[in-house]
Length: 204
Image (cartoon, rainbow, N blue to C red; front, side, top):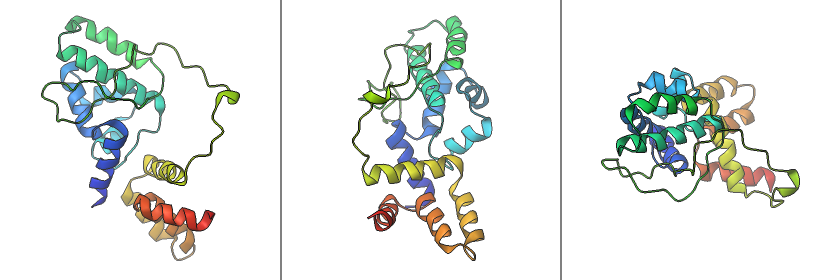
């Protein structure tokens, strides 16, 4: 599997479908260009383009993901006539100022004519105020699994740089820091299984 296909699969696991398909599906019913959609969710146009082409895997800012989720909900309403066209600009303004975090849950029914991928789960209402932080004592004390830690490291690398950028960086530092170059390649562009083996080897 090449890197782009790998990234597309990861996006599908995270968001229910590749981000390119999701953005195009959402933008149409709302009459948004790619640049206008980027402005609503709070991303730069170049960054959105890299996400849509799977050069990058994950949206790093939870508030941006929340706004994209809210746009998906609004697009479903627009497609089914659940919101008058004249009310869409005001709804977009509300989404533009919203904050929150994406929550994985069982998808709702698919839109007619969609690609078959599961859409974002529909939240009960658009977020209007920042969510309160969870108190430390309410947080679980169970440590994350090794695979979960590895996936977070991979997502972090891929949120800040493309596979090509990571490869160039690894090649540049390899003569002086081969172990660091291996770290970049393993977690930045390698398969999860390879990264998990590396992690378990170094962390017991």
